[in-house]
Image 1 (cartoon, rainbow over the protein chains, first blue to last red):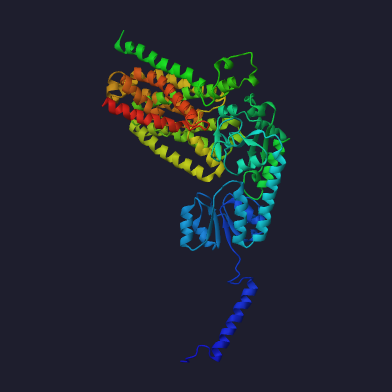
Image 2 (image 1 turned 90 degrees about the vertical axis):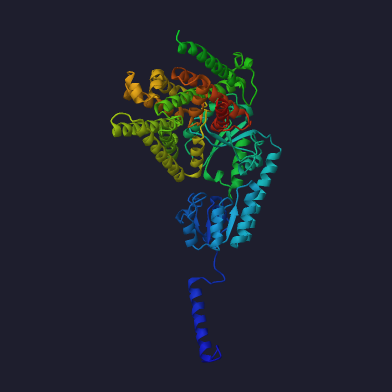
Length: 293
Length: 334
């Protein structure tokens, strides 16, 4: 047996193998060191952020509820908050999983499989730009993330400045209600991104004192709060004007509410309004447009 | 005057007075102070009269719905416990409530309120579910034994209850998060009906059920002693059981369609009333019907004021007040 491992023949063989590996790596576009991150996201807002900072091509699977941007509709779905498909997630060999901070079981399973994850919790508007920057670092798109986050912060600051001198109408921000009635009304409380968007837009949330993201508002609570403006959000688009008018006609029964009397009830529709993602500044600006008409 | 009649003349006015007082006071109290003088001041335009709107739009429909649902569930509880000869029976034992809830879940999941029937879609689907559940349980109970076996009724009802509950979980699993939230909130029950229309829609159904209940008290007394004793005393047991089951199911379906499944009323109120007035159904049934209204309206008053400006689901209050109070009475009586 030859005592030297790097004999002339051995060295030649090693070089041949190395050349083949290099050619294969160049041909497939991969190399072990520079492997592109493979991201699975279970949070629609974070999916939008990834695409907005140019990291969309790293996304290999999304949650069951992801619909934006349209490219995600062709990607594999791997469950969501209460039903993540752990087997599928592991089988897709992600290098990063974006999940909710409450998905502790999934975190344990991913840790066992040595898969890094990023735990996210919904917060106020400030959380949006912080999250965008963190995702930028994680995906190698720090520059684009910084640009997007700064743009959002700048637009929100400009909006606050524009509306600071304007009259601040007391506003009821509704994001859920039984169709055709005033039952099961859900409104924004004094916490969360919707509340922050409303305040940035120059409105005063009538339920600001309630330290919760949502309040189930009875008709008595609304009559007592006397909002000047009611903004009702729907995640599905309602393009027809007569349909929008029919949707809002239920409010007429509360004739003493200033918003009803002055017909300042506005229906804003679209998923972009209810997702704490990169379009929050658009949402806040839309609020401002109807608040200060 | 017989002793029952004499006791009825004391008990029914006493419970009636209590209920009347509660119904009178409840709309005047709430998270917002209102002036009754302003409420009934016709010189103030409706659109300017916040107090009148709070009274007539927000509180009165809610108090009336609470009274109707409380009465109905309490009376249905009395009938179910006598029919099944089981003190643990409730209006929700035999699967009717789960079937009703499944109907409501399906309506929410399929967005029937957006595409069909509007605001009436969920109550209609709920009542439809209750009637389908009633038909299945009734068919099974009569098919297996020829008559209406209470054992089969109980077994079939409990099994279907579990089955429908599993289907509810399945529907909840399939819907998106916004609809899941609506289904979960509906299952907690809610008396804030916001208009008189759903109340008026449920009145005929509840009225029929209560009229049928009025035929039952003497029969229920005999049924609790056993089918043979009842039969020996001239009771047409099968017919009486059918009327009891179908009327209790109708009442339960109508009450759940109006306010969702509000728990605890159907078990706590009948037992509280029995502890107070004895077990004769000729007294228990009217007393529980009246007290059920007072109890649920009082619980709702607490639910809408205790954590003002936010409101608690009334089912939490019925359980938190009814449970300990019931146990206290039980221990005191023992």
